[in-house]
Amino acid sequence: MVKRGVKRRSQQQVEDVSGNGRPSDLDVLQSLVTEMLLALGEKPGRNGLLKTPERVAKALAFMTQGYHRDIDHLLNGALFPIEYDEMVIVKDIDFFSMCEHHLLPFYGRVHVGYLPNKKVVGLSKIPRIVDAFARRLQVQERLTVQIAETLKTKLNAHGVGVVVEARHLCMMMRGVEKQNTIAVSSSMLGAFRSQPQTRLEFLKLIRRGSVGDSD
Image (cartoon, one colour):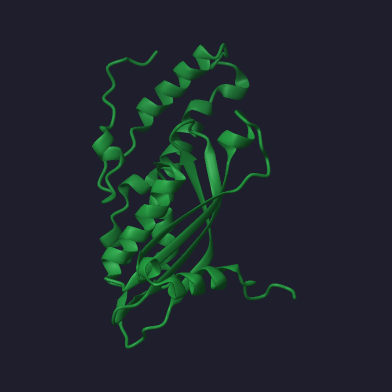
């Protein structure tokens, strides 16, 4: 049985967007999973569960690795000066995250648009930023805002728009048990908030078919 005196992350550490939390403690996680199995009435020593605590600990560490991602290191200087003032959109970014209320997954797609201010970011960096915030214990609304505010700050963009569409297993497997419900959240900053035509253009473009889609 694991000792009850295990130190937990503070609320401030959990919600710190800088990603400088402490590394996951796999030994503690394994002990907690073993204790959970016992509390559920299972036998951790039986054949099918022998390596379950280790597997779950590693899975949880992977699914929450975003706590340890530093955004500046992730960007790695991939900001390029350019005279381009039209909208840049990266859409249909797949993501998986963990609901902080039930520790069940939610997953879906993120659509990101921004208006450059004399510099653009490497396109691959936007999905990496999405992953950095998705791979934590999250709520969809905060995930949406964190992505938008980070891009607005790091790019000094004239505006940023983020839309997240997700399915939540906490609504599908339990509770109301609605399998076809999709939650949509958005964050509009700068010109995307103050200029209706810019916001409308963004929303229209992310609804268009993707490259390679059949007519």
